[in-house]
Length: 522
Image (cartoon, rainbow, N blue to C red):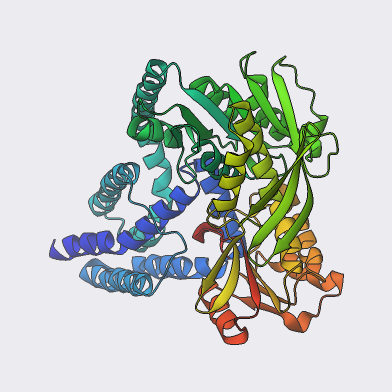
């Protein structure tokens, strides 16, 4: 009996780290079992070596079935204890790009997972299927995510609905609040920050913080931050499934809606580019008749879309000559950009710390909203000149004496191309550090390959992070005729940055393009 109890305790010990990893990956896959399953399949395909240890442990555990009595239990205790110790030692030395966040939801998941784990261990002891101990210790935590998600789903739905109803009531009580919705495949967060900088000069305004663009993130903002003194609420709205924008529009009911750009982002979950276009444009289709739609007419998908809602719309762009708000005479320098805005025949000069055409497009959309709300041109000019750089979006920063252009947030095909164009204007040596782009469905490899091709003549050195996911970029570089002696591949960001600091000087410019979470860094 003592050996059985010891084996049960050792199984519980060995399950701690695998359970933490499984919950971590489930969180990074947005608590969606479908995405989690796809990630598991990709991991099994691309990281075969990671399967060898559990497989070997299973085989050894199975072999112990030929042993009897205490001899079998002793061997299993040693094996499971060794597995647990190895897991803890590896975890001690491991660093994460985005660690597991112990939210209230995760804590509830931990409780349910622990109960399921103890039941599995108890069942093993009761049924005397001791050779399963190594499998329970190493592999079972990854499987328990599914029953845990099923068990917690009704609870999470009830909590979600309660908070949503509270937020809806707060908005209903704040009936004179001007609500601005912002969506798009890219540029939502930057546009939101820029718009807040402008509109807050004239109104007491609140924006959703960070990337709080889901129903629960927006709900939390309303419940915890929205006050009676606020006159404008700037709300970022994200979507990676059909119906997401429709749900958020029916929740917030903005009177002003901005569509920043549309592209092949989240193709894996949307299913097609047509679905993306239709869903993003619900931002305009569901506006009230007396509202305002603000559209980026540089984007072909937006420009070609026929809006059925009779709501008033205004357009902005750099290349679309007939845009209501157009930026021309764009120049970049080491500390920012200069450009001129043309509106109704008037030319208004601007200067900003922000870099890149897409940031200028975002400024144009914010100008359109600010002017609609009556903000004076001089106030807007001052706001554009003094506004802070948006974190991780072509943000110029100096770290350890090196000059970086930090474009690490959720890279996309359009933004990465613009980032390379900005880099090309900088004096050599120009360095790109990137793990590539993800969540692009079947087109992902080709988009990353094209990203590699575009680096020719725009960068002097390329540092790739993750051999597997950056192979298409490597191939694109080779196809373009890039000097492959100046292409370096590292397993981790830490190794890549160590090389950057060793091989560059303060005169060089280093572009950090994307920062993948641990679930997708291979």
